[in-house]
Length: 148
Length: 134
Image (cartoon, rainbow over all chains, first blue to last red; front, side, top):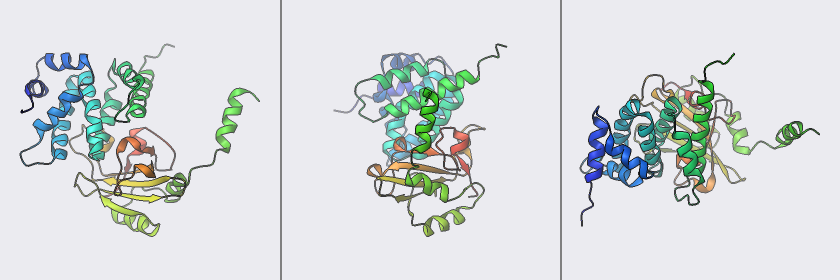
């Protein structure tokens, strides 16, 4: 039976449009969205192309989306990270680090600490989640208005 | 001994891991050409594999008896990143990875400990992306 990519297609459309990403937000509320991100990679992989190309294209798409919707964009990047890392795509992984560093969206730190606290860690991402969470916390402190 | 002082003393006496010493001894990479870096790494016993992105970048590794590996990795830069992102321009990285996580000369990025050009641990993108000449 062919895998249903309907949900991923809807998200893919929202990534490219300026409208409210209602489907994407709803999916992200339910969890880490690993499944939809894996499907998005498949959708972004050109015919007879390598999965590496799919990750690369998706990351470009997520980059533009994250500038409009930092929280949702970074959360999708967080879900993409282990897939990119398993393909040894250092550049894509570094790009995720950089978007989180620059955008440090409100709410993401709590979400990341939640992922890190999860008892199972099949992708060995705990250290990375905490590193990102610390980075966001540090950025928030730096950007606090001067109280003096 | 006060608690803070005791902690500082504890860290002061911790030996620096061999790969970190190695990545300090390599010297700074900032402003060097790819060819200069490659020659120097080759002379120091590193071996290289191309990175999977096929963009001309390479990963150079040298393993140590303590079970860790020193890595120098460089890439041409990703012009799709927004202006101001450190990864947009040609750069190198100095990293330490558990040797057990090195597969065919490469490793998954999440297992790397990132260093700045001086060989000190850092997560700051502007410190860990070391500008080089492509």
